Each structure stands twice: as structure tokens, then as C-alpha cells.
Length: 490
Image (cartoon, rainbow, N blue to C red):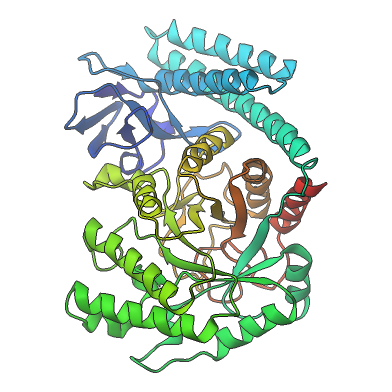
């Protein structure tokens, strides 16, 4: 499929690695994107109509992964900005119609905003003989359409939360952050004032630096602190096959069977030590992707099942969850795989393993391995789709507060270039919380929201994602998270 970008200087570097074509249900096809000057070419094996997903710099907003409407193959190139604007408004219109049919009262301000966006799109679509002028109008239509979508989502969350606050019994939300050590002093006080749950992070290289030599002291102190302060404890992930999550000695194992045996032995030791002290086991994470060993999908699926069974063998009562990263499946566009994250999760749930829920890891704005930034409407659509699996959802969420150095971050992903006009800062992280967390709260299947890092001054997973900075001071996102959580109960 062929596209033209009349003003190619406005796209971000490396965009060809993040653009893809997808089917109507949003699943990417394996494809190859080539951007040369104004010309974008996307090659794939299928000839079906498809939707282009493309990261675009939106004025006043920053980078957003937007998508076109359905496009057929043809010899004449499409004007990409016009098609992205058309797809943006189509999504907003369709969602407004669906929610209105379901009983939502939509304010007049939304229809005014949508009318302005539609006028801009009409001007873009009818001026394509002047491609650069058409792009300018299309970018304006995209901006106005996304603003209208935000207005729609804010009103949706407001009305749903008002209904949920009247429910009896009152909704219970597990809210917490990932800890790798017990907080102290002011950090501990802030944590206890904010959350009712602690995620006791497992970093295998620290716990078993040498084969059979277990170092439990730090994790013991963390669990004891949680018990002393009446916090629910979620422990894990017990299995995460990223290279930075595995001890060096594991790479001496020969083949899948040896790695599986060592991994399951570690799971067994953790569960035996902390059963009765943990209220939720986070068994596996990110097994929808290759990890350090590039195991096949069948091998990864088998390892998840074996890990769940091993936990069950030593703790038959405590609920357990497994989680998946990149829930929009961006990675499939560059690698042939049979199972999307959704298919992987659905297969496990249908296998009747006794899972209490599914976790969605949304590392917002990080790349590679993270989640390309999307608007609140697209997040709502994602949660609705995953809700169809029929089990509770746990959202593990994070967003960066800086592009600067972070020597304590373990994950190789970094915030995307041009993620925000003027650069990423704590105020932008706060805006992400205010923009997206209300959608999590409005979805009944979302029963746990976990921020993926508490503080930046201890070893952690993601670059500058903590709610406390490297000096231990709270970032604005912390208060925003408290305010949004309070909106669930009033």
C-alpha cells in the first residue's frame, strides 16, 4: 500500500519501525515499512483492506498513535495525513453513537467540537490537489478530533463513576505501586496514605545471584513492612524472561528443558517461603514475547502453564494472575507469530488454570518494548476488548517524567523522542495520569491499578517512571493519582 506525506519533515525519526497495517480488530499484520522522502510504502502478504496505524506529532499534544479508516489496495498513493484524520473522526463518531445508544448523556460541547473537526476534515479531503495544504488541514482535523474524543471520554468517565459511587456494596479497587524494598520515613508515610496494596517486586538476580544461594533479607523486610501496615501483598512477577530479569548463571543452561527446570525451582522456593503472607501471586509477565531465550510460542505457553501449576501445588488458595505487555500487539508487525497477547491470554483462561485475572502492562511512551502513546478513546476500546475474556483485569501502568539519565533503571526501553512538544517532564507525567486513569476507574472489570515504580532512587524497572523522584520528593503525578482514585468513592 502506498502513501504520500507532503511534509515529511514533520514525522519523527524511526517512524517506519512503529507504523503498521492492521485488520479491523486492530491485530497487526507482519509487514515492512519503507519511508523515502514523501513516499511511505507498506508491504505485507495479505491483500485485505486494512487500517494504517502511525505515530503522528499532534500540535499541542505530542506524539499519538493514530489510525486511518479502512483502506483498500490501489495504485494511486493515499494522502496519509488526510486518511489518519478521517480515521480519527470515524472512531470518535462511532464511539459517541455507541455510548449514546447505551444511555450516556452527551453534552452539546462535544457536538460543537466534532462539527469543527469535521469541517477541517472536509477542507483537507477536498484540497488534495494541493497536498501540503491538505496536510495542514488534516493535522488540524486530527487535533480537533482528538480534543473531541477527550471531551467524550471525560464525560463518559464522569457519568460512569457517578453511577458506580451509588452501588452497594461500594466498589473495591486494589491500588498500589511496585516496591523492591521497604520504604522508610516520609516515603513510607506517603505510600501508606495513597495505596491499599503493595506489589513486592521479584528480581531474580538479586534473590539467587548464585545457583542455590538465596538472599531473602530484602524481600523478607518488605513483606514484614506490608504486614505491619495492613497492606495487601501482590508478589511477582515470579517469571519474567527479559535478559535483565534473569541471573547470569541461567544462561549456562542448555536448552529449554534446563531453563524451565531452573525457573520452576525458583518459583517453588519463592512460593514455599511466602505462602500465607501473600494475597495475590503475579506468576508470569511478558511471556507473549520472546524474551532472552527466543523460545517458541508453544514453549512459552507451556512455561506459563507449568509455573501456574507449580504455584498451585504449594499454595492452592491464593489467587493468581499473569500479565502481558504491549497489549495492542505492536511487536507482531515485525515478527511472525500465531498468538496475539489477547489470544495468549484467552487460551490460558479457557484452559481453566484457575486464573483470578489478567494483567495488562501499559508502559506508556516507552520504546522498544513499551506501549506507543494513544488517546483515552483508544484505551477505552482496548479495555472493552480485553474485558470480553471474562476475568478481572489488573492494569500495570507507568509513564516517564524525564528524558534524562536514569542509571538505576533496568529495562532498556527509553521514552520516545518527541513524546511531548518541549520534552518530557513531571508535569507531563501528571497530565497522563489525569488523562488516562479515569478510563481505568470507569471500567468495572479493572479491579486493580498498579503504578509500575514507586521511587526513582532505588533500582527499578522503567526509566524515570517513579512517583517519587531521585531525591525522594513526590512528583505531581502522585497527587493526581490520589485525586483520581478518590473519584471512585467520592
